[in-house]
Image (cartoon, rainbow, N blue to C red; front, side, top):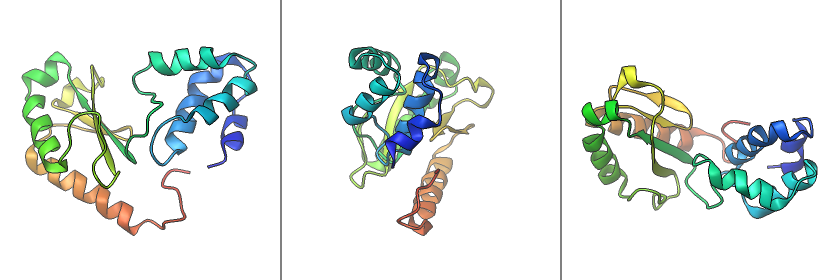
Length: 163
């Protein structure tokens, strides 16, 4: 991952800060923003490191701590609660063997909550790496996780998934 190349895709304007941060985080294999990357962003945008940290700490979708290669966000809106996201969450965590906000032992997945994903029409819902999944059941969880694991196994090790 060439941090400078990613940052240079955007004009050096503060309006691009969120786009730059998302691009850097998405390009990192553990979906987080190391301090070195934030320093590069601060220099590029001619702002303070504390200003960049302020934005990173404000938005829950950004992280300064290593997570998993795939970020699973479970919707916890009232609609998803009514449609059974609690049991989906319980099954998913049991299936992966993790608590919230911790990586799976193999570093592949990270499970976190989101207040609303904006896809209430398919509740209960989640996203994995920005891909929405709805009308979730236990069988869906097993199938989705298996497909992602298989896709990762078949990907070339030296080829980034989304770059």
